[in-house]
Length: 564
Ligand SMILES: Nc1ncnc2c1ncn2[C@@H]1O[C@H](COP(=O)(O)OP(=O)(O)OP(=O)(O)O)[C@@H](O)[C@H]1O
Image 1 (cartoon, rainbow, N blue to C red):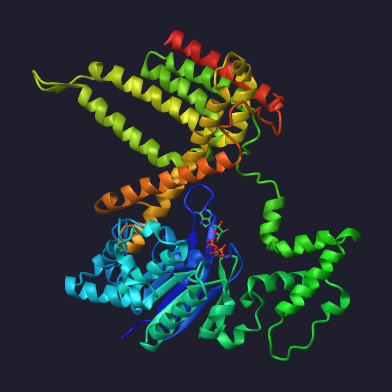
Image 2 (cartoon, rainbow, N blue to C red):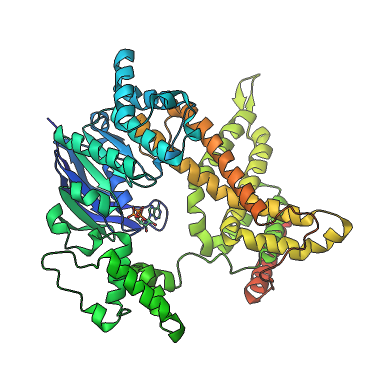
């Protein structure tokens, strides 16, 4: 029998120093034999809730159970996902069309079924059924999934779920990119799933297509489930309105519509939002009045920024240092000064003192170091291991600190210099870096030195670092979801690294290609074109202050080096 999902007081926060709360004390029950829609504004927390159900986000507090079985288990200090629970659901994440690990659609389907250990014969039958249900031609089985159209890839990702025949389907925006026929096939799949007594939780903005099918609707707002009701009652909730109509409802709320429109025609028991015809008429009227200076409220209301998000955007961040505080040239100069004086230290004691001086300087930016904690820890282990090996003497077998010390000193110097450089990556935007290289060394272009290309290259490398990290995180999630890994999502299990690494590299190459196309379309690389600059960097007070402090710190560190 299919069990129900329950969430009791579930809270989820982000990793890192900010500890942003994404879900707050969510209580919810999803029943089998029902299709539940999760609706709400952009950024409300719908995907987070779905990923939490699937164990892709660790809960800070509360409990998730499928029937009587908890999703998370504790073994000493370790938390692990419960494998039998993982096998009972299939998750399709947002952008499921770019999740491919293997070179043919058939291999992808087999990969998805791997954790279910089905026989080869059974697998073939399941593939046939899943392809038919997803409305895909069997001819596509031997194709590289990346060469399928966007909609076909979406269907293939659905087929991958169906082939596993899970009891629960967790779908994030499943209609995105599907044509009308595709949406009908999806609805048929969902109906058949429900008819078999199984359950589905679907995140969607496509209320028009899925509301008629749904049994229940839960409205997610600000990381909480604000309302969960049978689908019939949801018609009265604005968050269950199609996105465009919600914008119009917001226009009404912001009094951006003429008075006669504000008095909405009585919709006894119906939805409080206007019909598409009304929406079009009101929008046309607003456009016609644009010249009379009343367009601004329309734009503001149509953007329909949630009040909290709007306030957050308007308020100065206060907590995170801004990336435009310093001129990149001042930052680089300060870095070079401090790095040189750290590298001048000749003993571990002197280095420790000099590092303390540098640490004082970095105090205001310490939160920028948290995200590198993993790398720093790994490097610290590396120092210990290499130090231990370099101090070993064999005849007689012993450990000699005097042999290990120079190696440990060099490696520690590199660590401190690295620590110094890490916050810089977040205190400089790629564009400001590019501009600073162009301003400082632009004159070299007259000597036919390709300085603009060099500046662009450096900028691209800077842009690519966060992209690489983000893409790795996405593949780690995919590997967990598809491979049913029981470890917390932050780490990719060793057995999956091989499966993840090749598609990850492929994905990065594709991103690089897209970036190159975008640059070409903007005219980069055209011979003898004079670049146009949007702004000019100038050294300001914060830069002079930074340079003075760096000079002082560097002088102190050099005195330490000379005296110890
Ligand atoms: N790792 C993270 N670090 C910081 N904030 C995060 C993280 N993951 C999600 N968020 C934030 O949590 C909020 C909820 O995100 P989520 O993707 O769940 O929204 P959603 O309701 O699915 O939105 P959409 O309809 O746009 O897909 C957003 O404000 C998002 O920026």
